[in-house]
Image (cartoon, rainbow, N blue to C red; front, top):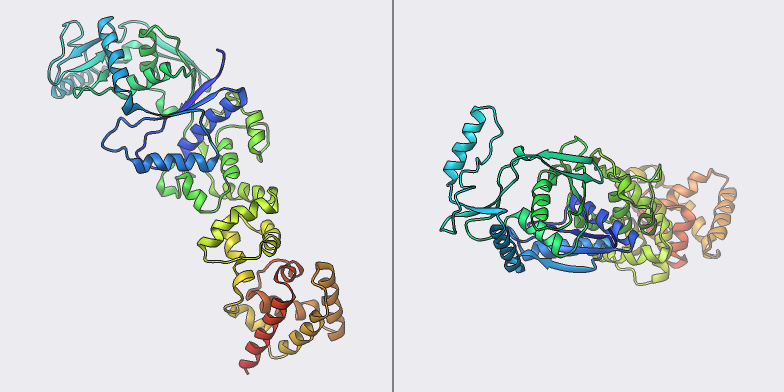
Length: 466
């Protein structure tokens, strides 16, 4: 086969959805693994539904995922002259013909076939009439009457469709525009695409495209039809299952490498391994390991994979990724060193960057209120005295985690109380909640000046309660 040339051909009628992104990923991974070429083609012949906004949404999704293309983007609407030349050649060579049958006539043909228990299809009425172009006429491809159209599918194995089940399908509409199957077959040939991984909803289109390619005297590409992505209820993934656009997951704080990892595992496997870096996916991907069963999208599993990727990244990388989420949340963190300390302590406890940004809020915006349920337990009147003793000790403490731990131990011994009697009011005083990170990590991030200020505020609050 030589160089592997794959493609991703989205229709710009909406966002880049999860299933489309996975298709793009599989083709991209195969091209990258083999040192081949990955082509982006925009199939925008649906003029009524195609929009520039959708084209940009596709670009945004691919760029966020880090799926780059070597050629393109090519637009089908700019290739109509090429399609016309191919259609004319198919007519000239006897592989296609003009048809003047009306939609009503075709409906009647199909109903007649159904009544006889036959496959409802166009009956070839105009096939041998040798008609020319007239207003309202379409061009149909002349499907062989006998035999079968077969191809070896990389995922499903050998697929053979009896030609008797196919009707003479339209390749040019009455308005002169090419149909999907004609445009796709021509594009794949002229772009030298030789390997096509796509959703198995295209299986019925493949025999038609194979016939067109053969009629053009060219070699048929290798196809692989990947099972669809389903929701938890085993229905095709849709908006009712939650987010389906990859950019929605970007906005939820999923890392692109985590999304790539999860999408790859939706129908592809490499032993029992679940966590993959981008480099590992490129190294290990092969279409041979694409399964035949549909992938079920599990958002909880995606969150778990994202959690692993957050922990696997360096503090600097996660800090950079977190910045736009802090900005969106209205959180200003001017001290980069302090922010990196916060990230280091929050990363093991965060499943998304949105969650991490929200959990970072108390570090940079102070305590706006104390959790009322926690305050009932921790802010009893005697807690003010405990906090003041703690403040006095902390004022003389170097703010490293080891030194802080030693100070807490000394205060607990001095007051002759359990650790919780000191830790609970301290945690609430500096964070406003009982679910903050590790105490010593938290104080290390806050620093001495801010910690002492928050203790004073908490003491004032406790005494104001009477």
